[in-house]
Length: 111
Image 1 (cartoon, helix red, strand yellow):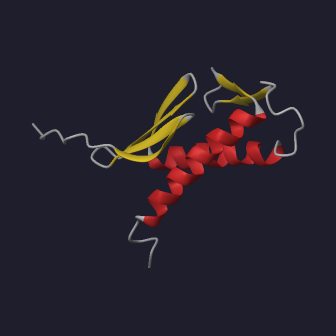
Image 2: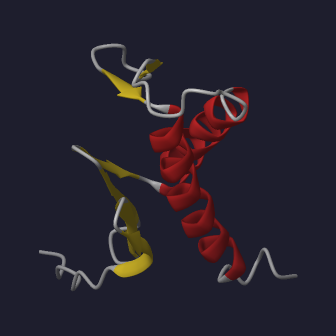
């Protein structure tokens, strides 16, 4: 039986809107935002962050920042997110800042 690792999550970003943490032992990321929670691998979190960044860029100039009418479908198609431009911007900030910290701490990326 393989020994279980100790979960020691590292907080990559935390503010009043949500959080992004990484557990190096199981190589997973947990994102909490508003009323949802996601657990992904690094590759999945990067893909999700890229998608959110694209939507955020597309809706940056919206005048009504609080209307919750931006629908983002999940890759599996059985649920989606419904966000305002304001929420989208906050979610994007959490993801981009968190993944920037991951990249800065990667010794391979620093070479």
